Amino acid sequence: MSIIAITDHDSLIGIEPALLAAERFPALKVIPGLEINTDIPNAEVHILGYFINYRDYELNQSLKRQRDSREFRGQKIIGKLGELGIDIAWHQVLELASGGAVGRPHIARAMLEQGYVTSMQEAFNMYIGRQGPAYVERARLSPQEATELMVKAGGLPVLAHPADLDNIEKFLIDLKEVGLVGLEAYYSRYDQKTIQRLVDLANKHGLITSGGSDFHGFGDDKETPMGAVDVPFDCAERLIALAEQRAQ
Image (cartoon, rainbow, N blue to C red; front, side, top):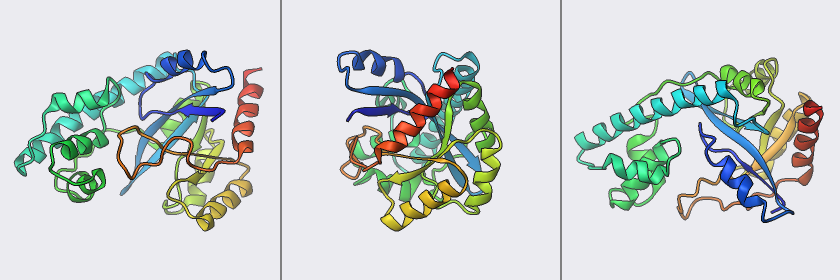
């Protein structure tokens, strides 16, 4: 790979180590980024932010509130799992999070390691997904709030893997008004027809297309490896050019 973006969920702690590590590889460009989980009625929306100022005070304070909410939610999920006979230790979940934001994937991983499920997807499908018996809501920003927050921190907001959103075109128009610049079209779970639909939609509304592996590092055999999604190079070039233009 010649370009990689670090876009952890609700966390910026991976950026500085990645930038330092990349100093040993002059040919590799690291884009500092972020992915914020947001909510709309009956669905979850992820907003990506590229070229984020990861030292921005307001952004870091907002993310801390998000992470605190994640921990409170995680403990409640573990409590519900315990009532179902699934005994997961909170310290195990924290270890899997490695100091980052705690999320349901860490709980799913713990369930897999303890032998309660045969895959992380099974943990979501049967227990901790939106319709599962151990699901717990948490406090979230709205997509508009997350987009505005990223813009204030100098970032370029992009709507992540949006193919299944209802009324996606209206959604794009509303988010573009508060700073959205891109649409993720190249995604591991999308076929060529879906990709083309999203590319056409991005072109129609003057948005940059982006893509990525959505790699989370859990070692699950169903996870797409880093660099495995075929993203046209001009997607990154357009993002880089816009970031440079706004930095002038």
